[in-house]
Image (cartoon, rainbow over all chains, first blue to last red; front, side, top):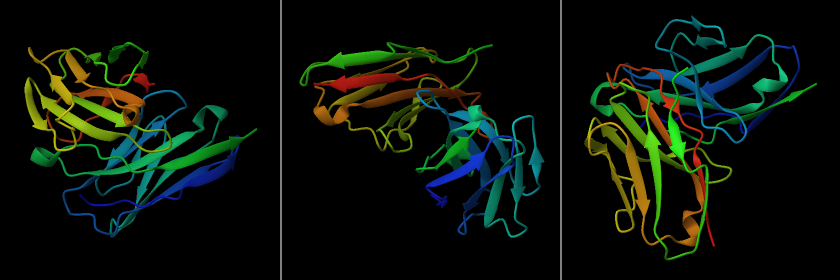
Length: 111
Length: 115
């Protein structure tokens, strides 16, 4: 499985933007980039995913580097409810479709 | 809003006893996953079902763990006998199963403590 590398932890202030990086230098052409997050004492929840182009939804934006070897999850205005562990996952789909989680990035949001 | 249901939420059991967890996925979801999450780590996939068939159970400790999804709907994960190292959160997830990068939905998990 292609690997991802994320910082162990990051800190942000409330109402400021947050940029969560993910490196995936061994990504293959068919790997989608998925982001999930896990709030304390809850199961993970889907945030966003993309293949090559930048993606936006109501929760966040995903910026994908042109060579696809890295990506950044952008929370435009962090709130206290965004404090969670954020996981960056590569998924190739088809017969190899599965979600393999790493350790993720623990995001702390300061009031 | 549809959600993945898991029960029980919490379970305390003595080592060497049997324990079982139940999961009811979102209606119509063909793929069901069981994950184990040890405190401070990311979820680890134990078993993946497509309908009633096992697609991946390479990380399932088959000497003590078993999983079934007999009618391709709800699923049960069993541990027998439980060991102290099995203490963890057990998460169930489901998705549409079309394997083209859809969104997976997770339940709230079962917190198992083995004493």
